[in-house]
Image (tube, rainbow, N blue to C red):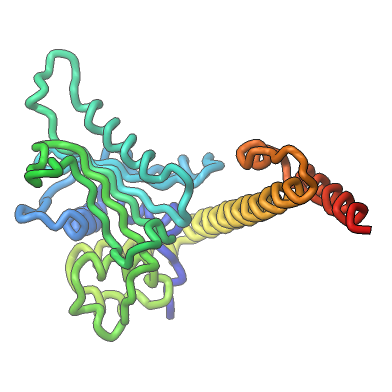
Length: 292
């Protein structure tokens, strides 16, 4: 029987990757994303899963902050939809992790890398099929990287084309994307067969717990509804913004036809949709009267 629990929901994501008892799952996820010669072997979760934060939260709780065995600070988050300023916010988080390391009396050379990772269930860069972007501080001419600097990773989940039949032979990052997107469709036994490895078994056991424990399932359902509501609001805002853009363009065209002063687009887009609609209707009426 399918577990019916999606790791995309913030409650599940945080419990899977932000619980010290399932730290092996976070280690596996970080190693898949960072793909370093020296893999991470230990992590300290700095903001461990806390049931109460979800009971009290009105916003979506998304991030997991951790420090690995080499002293690198990492922020991992799941975003169900693209929001404006995402890359800037990810950079800000990485910079905050970087500067927070320097306590009074410490030397700058003690600073370790700070890494911000975002799994996004949406498209961010529509001009490329590249799924995983890694932004680093690099010299343009030589390609030389700043040591112990800032990194920002974006992983766009919809760009992956994954098949259950071949997922056991896929790369680690592809396997984790498959788990994030489709864990809810399979039983624990099916997932364990497709995704071998202790890190996946640790993650699957948490999903199984959420599915079977009444208290966790109730909280999961509440958070899933909150995410659906947030997505609906974002979609409505986007549609309203697109409608406003069309109306503003038509208003400018009608003003030119009527030989009236043309309002700047920026000024028009500041107006509420209702006012734009009324102004557009008035200009249409003036145009019809002029043509009679």
